[in-house]
Image (cartoon, rainbow, N blue to C red; front, side):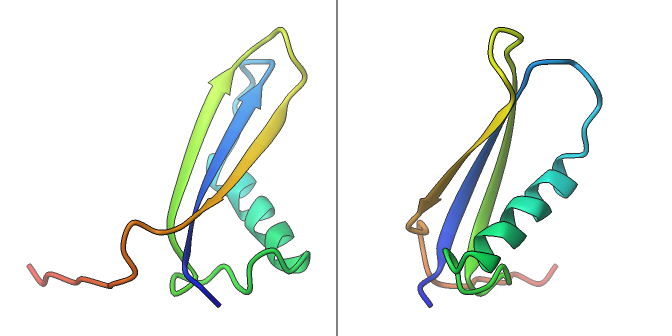
Length: 79
């Protein structure tokens, strides 16, 4: 039930176009289905960082880091 921040590092071995938000959604759904995280709603996943790298020397993979959020407070500033 604790808030988390998640860093997804996608490593691609081709320069084929990929949709980062669809890839992230798939990983978040998997983490939820495996009960690694309770839910992928904003109250649980406070920060989501998506990084993409090109490395033709290695097979494609995704690194997942689940970290403590920098803050658990929610701040909203109306403009």
